[in-house]
Length: 232
Image 1 (cartoon, rainbow, N blue to C red):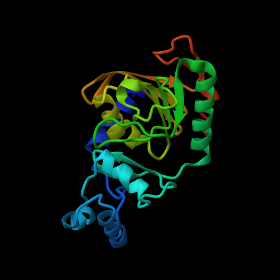
Image 2: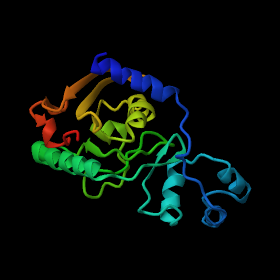
Image 3: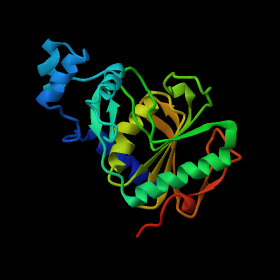
Image 4: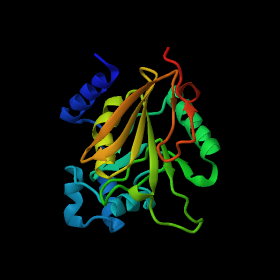
């Protein structure tokens, strides 16, 4: 089985699997705080306990009210607040090196943000590990939208199936032009381009000894071994 066939199998399996146990739940005290802050009505209090979905505005309001703590590793997907796995040392190093190399190579032609939100629609605000986006002014307070994005990078170990399944499908549906998934398990990079519906029409796998260039910046060539650690 080729590596590309293997990844397509992972995607099919991931999309057919119901995600369980990763949605952020709220205590009675937190639901009371939502009502007090005017984020939900008193009549919706029990709906929150039963898994009510949130808009981006409500999600941000939960953070502003202190109901969602700054240190929580969470993101909003289709109205669900998803809890992300803790970041291990290999994941951290890959993210740090990716961001550093991108900034150095791309310079002032784009902004490189690390683990910060982008808004895909009114109910979806993920936090990709790396986002290469259009430069805005210092006073621009608008959210980062799909039209602002050149490239997203997800670093994946325990989250590989999720990143290649649900998350990648949302990026494609939003029209994100290019997504890299760094597979720390295998020491390789999955490059996804040409979004069509909820999938990418062009997928290629680059081994650890290879190089990769963002399609928006073809003059930039990054060696995978410089930002993906070797497999133990």
